[in-house]
Length: 215
Length: 200
Image (tube, rainbow over all chains, first blue to last red; front, side, top):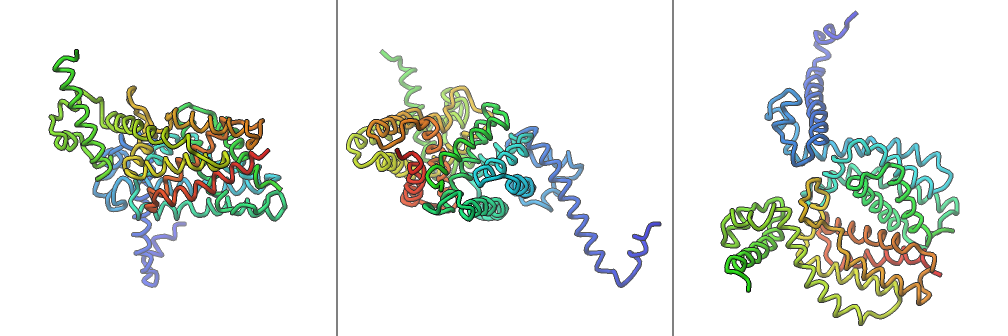
């Protein structure tokens, strides 16, 4: 039995019409994102044109621009999705680790693993991160906020469990570790390091940073 | 004796690099076209391409040229550095921030370009600055001799970690227009944190 046409005829549910339009718009957006993701991975940021992306999504370039203002906007939307998708695996990895140090290594290891299939995308993202517009930068930072909060949370838990002291501002430590995590993508992209080696290298750096605040 | 053609080529090279350095810093790397560089340098687009393989190559050469001025400054200053190893390492970073922030847009373009998957053979991306690294390793090794840095510390690892912190702090310049003073203050705290773990 199909009840959807019935609902469409029901005048009380007229606002559904708007929702349907919103849904259609959402679907178009998703189609563009999917096609763009594949294009960026395949051809890199510079190589992928809006025209190619539109063609791959089976729509006009005008339809792409109805959902996204320009290529950087589209690219940031994909990145935002990817970072949002990292939150749960990173949380899971952090939860099961026995110590704050292990939690950090595990959660960033999970992030490296999740990104390993799309290093060209990350590489383009890191290149873009130095020249964003202020508005794009604000949105991007908003997308990263839950992940960065998670790093602080793990450090706070380490302090609560008396593994770490508060001799240094936890935010300072979290920022350094975050930067070391990002820096780890470069050798992965250029030297083809495995996820395991990439994670081991980060673990060494995390140990170095935490050495001064170990309880 | 250099041939006339060789002298001309050197002149073109110098003019192009000067024009590119200004334009990259004024309007940004992405926005600068080879045509605009040629125009400002007063040379033809064709002659830019006989000297450089690509825009990325021009950027790389601009950055390579700046190194001379930077290290002339560092050589003058480093022998007068005082204080603990930690203090001296901080000073070296402070000098770098001060220098690079004079043309910060140019430097950000240099970092951004180092992530490009299509580097030319002649392009030297950010992160291969061996003199910078050598200077820091010397300071760290001296720190071990002075008994300020643990003898079993992995100095390459320390160097790598310091360099990563140094480089990524520029994101504050990119995102919040932070100047050299702000970057130096943050780096000072980060160096202190890392050195705290290196104490004997």
